Length: 144
Image (cartoon, rainbow, N blue to C red; front, side):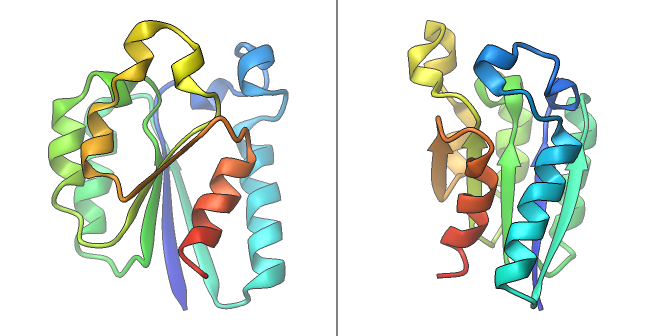
């Protein structure tokens, strides 16, 4: 069994209603269901553990908890914390498995401050601008 942890940061609980022209019309729950269905149809031996929090400390605690669990990879959409959180970066740097950072939008086409991603320093792969497919492709990248 290959276990993946998918971590979602602040405001991603508002997907579907928050700036749908940027983030799309699907909710995080719909993205979770669609991604899980596609992956498990192709790979019966894959388990996806989804987590979301708006609180920086909760995200750090979840990353730290993952250190004692056997994850094949971590997929993380840190949201706005990607650009601001040295503490989340420090937690991610302790992770031994691959980290795939995803962003639904192409952050380089947005505000200037979004071009800097502190958390990317701990990431194995960064995928952005792929919309909801970023989660699916992030997981698939570790199953090839």
